[in-house]
Amino acid sequence: MPTSLPPFAIFFAGALLVPFVRGWPRYVLLLAVPVLGALNVAGIQEGFGLSVGILGYELSLVRADRLSLLFGYLFHLGAFIAILYSLHLKKEDSATLQHTAALVYAGSGLGAVFAGDLITLFLFWEVLAVSSVFLIFARGTERARSAGMRYLVIQVVSGVALLAGAMARAAQTGDIAFNHIGLEGLAGWLIFLAIAVKGAFPLVHNWLTDTYPESTPTGTVFLSAFTTKVAVYALARGFPETELLIYVGAVMACYPIFFAVIENDLRRVLSYSMINQIGFMVCGIGVGTAKAVNGAVAHAFNDVLFKGLLFMSMGAVLYRTGTTKASELGGLWRTMKWTTALCIVGAASISAVPLFNGFVSKALIMSALLEEHHYWIWLAMLFASAGVVEHAGIKIPFFAFFAHDSGIRTREPPWNMLAAMTVGAIGCVAIGSMPWLLYDLLPFDVDYNPYDVTHVVTQLQLLAFAIGAVVLFRLARIYPDEIRAVNLDVEWTYRKLAPAIVRRLGSAIRAADATVRGAVLGGVNWALGGAFRHTGPHGALARSWPTGSMVLWVAVLLAAFLILRAF
Image (cartoon, rainbow, N blue to C red; front, side, top):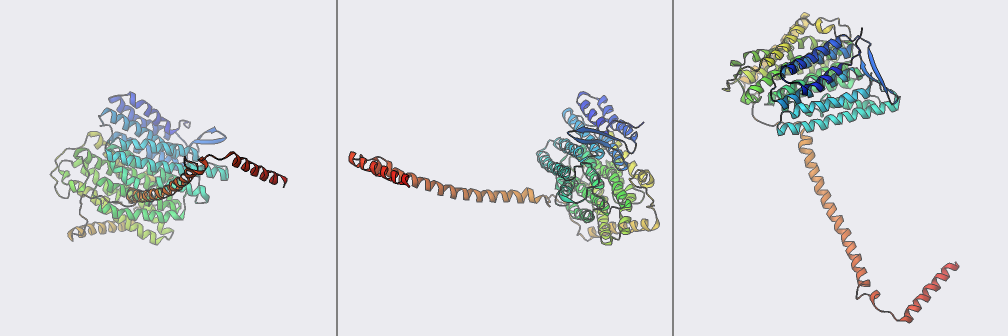
């Protein structure tokens, strides 16, 4: 019997109970929510749907097919790992806020990927934004509050664009079903813009690099799993085989490398790395073939594991040392051996080392590019792959745990953090060694072996080249030093340029206002002065007039009136 319970319902119910449960019962509740939710989703069969009628529209709360079910499994796995990672939270107010917000956030992500229409998608799209911002605010710093407000404004703009697109599509076609949309008409472009913001496309990406490093150590793990993956799902659902996405994805995969190389904050390095990995997914969706789309959604699945593992390892470092600045770390392998080893697993996975999960998903995308004769894009993605090895595969573990000895001597993070990282690492190795575990869940049937000799040798050559380049650059002293600095990219437009423009426009408007106001007041004063001269105590109209003169003027006016009346 297929289940009729919406996947998001269990998470929302759990969020309502969290504030009323304390101690170990809360831990049981938190871990039970994703487990029960996963069992619920496992009982949903392809083709199952759940709809309600509102105001003449049929809202599809659940639409189950292979694509939505894959993301359903992914979000439950990501939620379980992130919740396990957060169990150590002790400060009651902060713990309650983060756990409640996290369950609502994960539930809204599930609601979005199972939504069968644009209005339902919009509702969960907005809940996703509002609930996630509390994971940033929970950090409690001024930087976190400012970053959270910027994040919320940008995410609300994305939601407004989605709603406008849904309304335009309903007006044009009378249909609000969330199926293939494409870049046709105003509705298509508005929906595309909403997804572009949520997916951190170039020029609208800085909400990610601005806020993820400012969130709590646990909050960043949740954030890395849901928001951008909902955007990838929406692209795979509504815009497959959109050629523009091929080039957007290539740009996304390449440009973050240059910022990640010079960035000192290792959590911000991972944020740029996330944009880089989303670029591979976007490019695959743009190609649009079965193999390419499979590769894109498989890479989204794997990204939650290996990027989550890397964020968790840096969160553990932040939890124990109070910083993730590369210039202040180093030598932590001496006292954080397990964290170091687990971080290296994540680094190997994101670098697409054979036998790790990044290899088996990226292979599908790269192979699809060659099959569709996108040779230049393939070369760009090859460069991006080498860049991944440098900034995420080498830089993250090297500067955090090795490099120079910072003198910091701490201890391993709490058991639950290590357990969550271990689960993520096991997933990375299991999928990398047995790719059919993931391939069997993909939207289209997979007939591909990533472990053919040509691909393995090519990838090993790429890894050797990337590692050799880093070693050579460091020996030649041309590798960027890890220094304290603030690196601005597109966010300069709204954090520096926009305020400067507003200030200049304000000055110009104030000057124009003063000029106009002075001219108007001068004219009014002149008119009042003239009137005063005629009507004041010494004016002509204030003097006494003889009775005869007044009678004469009355006669003149009466004669004029009679003449005009006659005509």
